[in-house]
Length: 276
Image (cartoon, rainbow, N blue to C red):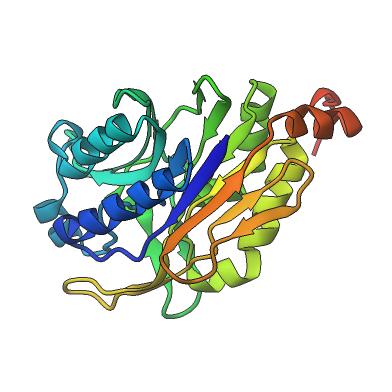
C-alpha cells in the first residue's frame, strides 16, 4: 500500500483552504497513493472563537467533509481527513475536533473525536487552551480499512502512550497522528515522540502535519512545525515532508509490523505491579 501524506498551511477560511486541499489529495492519488491523509484542522485553523462560530458547520452541513468524501469516491482511495473543526449541539457551545476515515466509496468508515486537549503554556507568548473552545472525545477508535487496521488519534494525543498501546493491543497496524503541532514543541519533541510510539507498538505511524505561519482574523496567528512523518514499526523515519506544503509518498509493507513485534514482543509482556 502506498500512502500519501498531505502537508497544509491553512488559514481561517474553509472556503479558501478547500481547493488547495483537494488539489493535493488529487496529486497524492495520481502518485499512486491508495491511502491519503490530511492534517489536523484541515478545514481551518483559528483561535478566534467568534470567527470559528461564523465559519464552522455541523458535520451534516460541512462542505469540506462533503467535498473530500466525493474526492475519495472519484479516486477510489481511502482518505483520512486528519480532523475538522465542527459545530456541535453541546449546551456549552464548544466545537468538536473530529477525524474521519473515508472509504473508497465515499462512505464514512470511522469517526474519532480528539481525546486530549492542548491546554499548555509553551512560553509567555505561546499559551493555548484548546478545551475552552473544543470538547474532548471519550472513546478510542480502531477502524478496519481492509488493507490494515487503523488506530486513529490527533496531535496532542501523541503525549499519552497508553492510548497507543491500547490501540496496538487491540489490533492496530497503522497509527494515524494528524497534527497542527506547535513550532516550539515540534522542534523539540515531534520526531522523537512519533518514533517512540512506533517502537513501543510495532506499528507504522503516519503523521500528516500543518506547516508554517497561519494568519487568523482578529488574532496574532500561529506557527506550526511541519515535517509530516512516516515512521516504520522498528522506529526508522521512512519519509519527512519538510516545511513546505505538498505531498509525501511512502510505501508500506505491513509484514514489517509482525516482524518488529516478533523481535521485541513487548505488547504481550504487561505485568501488574503495585504502587506508586
